[in-house]
Image (cartoon, rainbow, N blue to C red; front, side, top):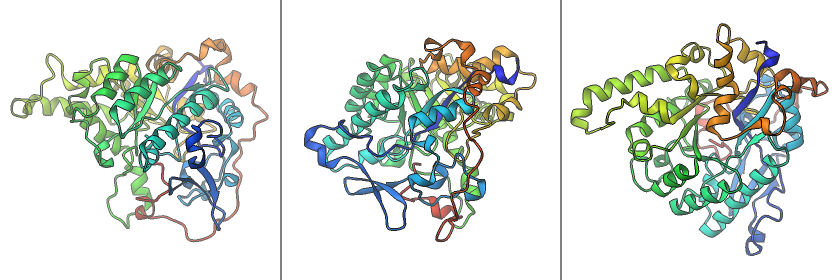
Length: 426
């Protein structure tokens, strides 16, 4: 196998939602309460909804910009690459990167629809959320069949409504839903409660995989307010490790054996140590803590029920058999600052030396096809889905970094600048 032969399916990218996305999608009685884009005096643009504001911070949309211009300040649509928000340009950027298919997490609503959950009228929140899901499935994903894995948002304020929405969008072909890595941080019941059982049950019945993305608890690991932003960025995967422990020791995976969960953008190198630690704790302590995995070890339950994902993780690939080759999926994370676009194939290829072709195919696309119930080959033959074939048709796409000009105002470089920032989609 050569680099050009890779077939890449990314299970974690992001959409910067375009203005006007709610047009003709809302019930008439809420027509004057539709979320809309407004421009501030400083030129930055924000979404307004029900008296609240949401911005796109810089690190969420830096594809195509020089690294020196990265930052966490709010942006405008004019400052970001069109592929962030325009579906046609997005597909061209995917082609230039050799990526056949993508699953896109939200931006302005936050990662599990937290913004919609804050609506003063729950019926308005539900109407907006359903309109969002319909736009995402029908327009963002539906415009190019076979190129996007649909991902829905849940109405997290009502587990019964969550179950209904899982079933509704499943009928539209959507079999993935974004939920919180730690709902307790959102002042909601934790994984250890039976509060979410209607939701888990619906996901089990419909074969819908539950995606827990880092930062979907609206909180990040911060060591000190004056710590450099590098510390916060470095520790982001710790959120997923915490979520994995919380989920594994909760009754959820044992109570719903058909439920499958994906830990999105959390990497994989930590998994072998984590599983060793879980088994050690269980063996030494379950006699007094009351944990009961029956004939299985925690590591076996994790390996059977949990999908893990990576962007660039050489150590994880080296330890892939201890992670679980059948549960590893790949991510491009376009257009975030961790993204490897437009050289994702080259970055990944550097870690694949000595990996058998069958295992490469599992991690790059076959696992994603299985776990997310998505088949890109139903729309085009596999030989036209390779890195080489896609890039051959996108030779005219300009992927060179382009400066947008110096930013005004002070740069935000401390952890305290980001935590609690109203524009973060974390």
